Image (cartoon, rainbow, N blue to C red; front, side):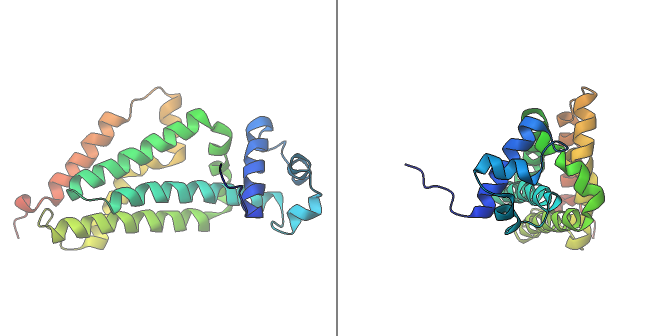
Length: 201
């Protein structure tokens, strides 16, 4: 038997997510969430100050899930090149699945990109740090020869943004583009550039 979710914030977020899926972001409010939980809206306000704060927390939770997914590749065993490849591919597939299976929750990203750049920046820093960890490990293994790991991690981040940014993923899906072959080509080119055997100094 599963343990019930004990954190009231998590219960509120779970209920809010279901309301957003059923009615959309614009038609979901704190009163609706409270009614669905059998609570008064004042009970919700003890944990979140506004509807916007709830939606921010939902988007942040999705970002945390993606960070956990990327961390599994960053901390895995095996060649750094394979882990880097797998990390970016997993994020791309996760974003595409979220868009297809959970479009209303995916849509919450649109608002935070303009209204909560701090959340977006924090997410970017975390992901770049995970990429840096993979590259550092590749250097330690003798797999990569990189003179500035911070700069290289930034290059990877910038190069793969088109494959992992929700807006770009959404555009590609709506246009019917298969991005995976391009993703593989970009990662292969980066790995070739980082490879120790290709360094001249």
